Image (cartoon, rainbow, N blue to C red; front, side, top):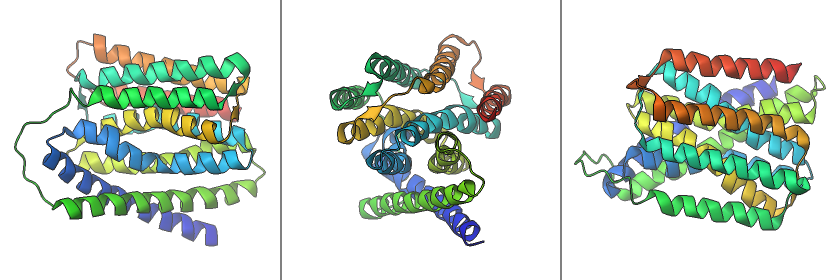
Length: 304
C-alpha cells in the first residue's frame, strides 16, 4: 500500500512539474525570440531527460549495465512509438520539414552507438567522449535555423520563467524517482528479471516526464514543443546520457541490445522518410495508431 501511495504522489509531481516547465519554457522562448520547437528540443528535452541520466549513472555505478542500456533504449522506444503515437491521436501535427534534419541526426546517432558497441562489445571512455562531441556538434548546428521573429505576448518575467523551469525539472525528477523506485519494489515481489525491469518498468518511469510534458504541451497548443521534446529527449538519451555515463563507467555492450537498436533505427528511418516523402500535409490518428500498434507488438514479443 505504501508503494502505491508514493507512486500516486509521483504522478502528481510529474503533472505539476510538466505544467511549470512548459509555462516557463514558453516564456523564455518568447523573450529570446526562439521557436517553440527549439525550446522543446533543448530546454524541455534536457529537463525531461534528467530521470534517464540519474537512473543510468546510478545503475552504472553499481555495475548494472543491462539495467542502464535497457533504460536508455527502452525510453527511446517509448518516446518514439508510444508517446509520439499518443500525441498524433490527441492532435494531428503538420508535416513540417524542420524536425526532419534532427530525425536524421537521431538516426545517425543510433547507428554510431550500434557500430561502436558491436566492435568491442563495449562503450569505452574514448567512445563516450566521441558521443559527447557529436552531441556538441548537434547543439552548434541547430541555433542558426530556428529564429522566431513573431511578436508574442510575454507572460512572465525572466526570473519567474527560470524559477518555473527549475521547479518543473525538480518536480519531474522526484516524481519520476518516486514512480520508478516503488514500481521496481512491486515488480521484484513478482520475481521480474533486471533486463525486463530496465526495458519496461524503469523505461516507462523515466519516460513519464516526456509523456506528461508532451500531453500538457498539446493542451496548451504547443505542439512544436511536444515534438521537439520527443526528438530532443531521444538525442540526449543516445548521445548525452550514454556518452556521459560511459565516460564515468565504461559500459559492457551485449549483443542482446541489438534487437532494440534495430527497432529504433527502423522506426526512426520510417518516420524520417514519411516526413520527407509523404504528400500529406499532416499526420494524425492513423499514423498514431500504427505507432502504438508497433509498440504493443514490441511489448508482446518482449514478454515472450
